[in-house]
Image 1 (cartoon, rainbow, N blue to C red):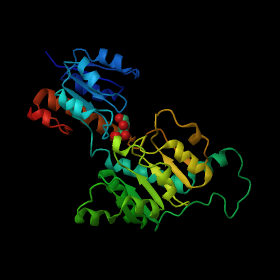
Image 2: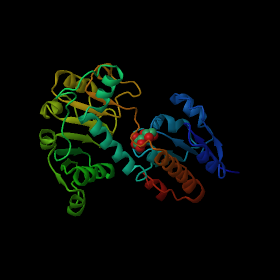
Image 3: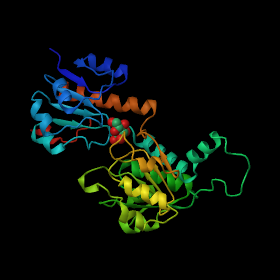
Image 4: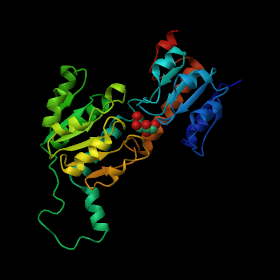
Length: 326
Ligand code: 8YV
């Protein structure tokens, strides 16, 4: 008998077809957002689950789903997983690194440019029929090329952004990360490690690319915003909760910070009403990895993790490989 797997959100039909070659597949092509209790009900008798960032996998869910052996996340971030609880329960966790790195770095730069050069704001002005004459300072924004790009979090995506800034835009790149990159990687990215305080003070454009955890919650709040240049741009493509959205909206409203570009939000898909009221923020609905080929590659990798583990005991990108050894 084939193992049973649940695909918890809508996904590419070809990925479902691939899974169906190996598993009894239950899917959710209507994309119903199940409550944790409903998810636990759907998981009864399932050995594997294909998740996205919106399914929380924690000790309570695992206790209610004794047949579950693997959760394959279609995301590089995995803050929806309680990894310790999964390891404790002997449940494997996998994510989708690498396949989205360059696409997400492209989007980070797109958001930086749109924000600094006021692209959304000026388009709204034009569409509203308000453009009736040229003016020397009409939507004059911040310079990007040659300025200082700060990066908080310097994993694969941060390094992709550093290279775009250094080699594409002639920017001076500084970064802060708990662990410093080795000299060769720093040279490849043309990036210099600085303290968080120096990063906040010196960045003309600050990009957030660090993973979310209890330790990174509100890494950028009122105190950090107060240390930044009044002319600076802040871009968050990492996770909601890394920025204190209420404090950011206040800084944008008072002119303490010039502009922000946000792809992720605290409590998304709900967006803080004070941010919606700000003209100097570009808001996008968590689409940094959203190109057709990249989303397909992410879904294929999540599926391959289910196949690799449940059929051959060899997942491609495990997060808690201790489970395999046990
Ligand atoms: C996902 C992301 O699309 O990979 C991540 O961590 O944030 C996005 O690329 C999103 O999390 C849905 O799973």
